[in-house]
Image (cartoon, rainbow, N blue to C red; front, side):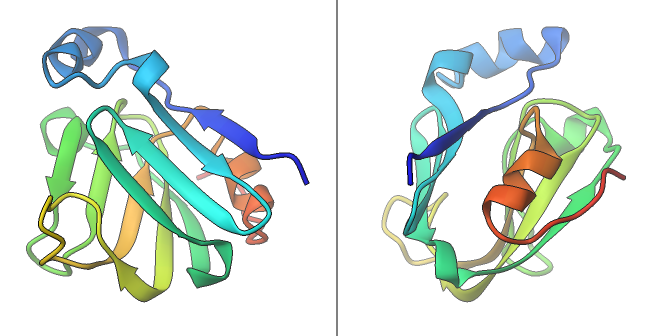
Length: 132
């Protein structure tokens, strides 16, 4: 199986702010291979086995200040990598993964990514869904 790459969908206004964080279209994507899910969001990354993904749900719209940039949920330790306020895909993991913390002390049970094709990403992961 060839890896499928899903680019993030950038809103024009926040894209300028995200560039300051080195989050740009050429440095941000989600890739699904035969065995691995790789998320690249500027200097941040997440890698886990595809079999670790146990669910996917289309979410949004969001409040722009709450979604743009990397975010850690204090409620459930989920991580969000946001580039637009329209929609994203919330992934749930069987085993929490490392992503936002460079030391790996915080493990995330879920991750939201604001890719351009949320339905296609869910399908590629084997968790078909419909748009919100």
